[in-house]
Length: 129
Image (cartoon, rainbow, N blue to C red; front, side, top):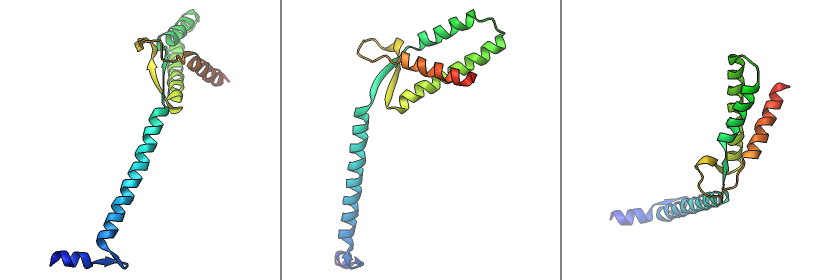
């Protein structure tokens, strides 16, 4: 008796069972579209490396040649590291997975150290203006 009552229930003239099945079908289709989009985005990601040792080492070498107080050096170091962080974050926003060059064993990963160096130098030049 309960089965007969459920099969007779309608909403706006449509059987309730059909509406539930149509809703599940729509949800499944939307999930499939989302999953496909996510997989395609992951395939577009590129793995790159950045040599943080050389970037920071070059900065420290340049700072050591500069005659300045420890407080000024600390301010410049904080600013440099913040610029470096923004430059690496920019690579990530562009869809790259950034690895530290020193942790990459093979040569098959493109090195973006020069690109990051230019971005950091550009930020430093803008800060001086």
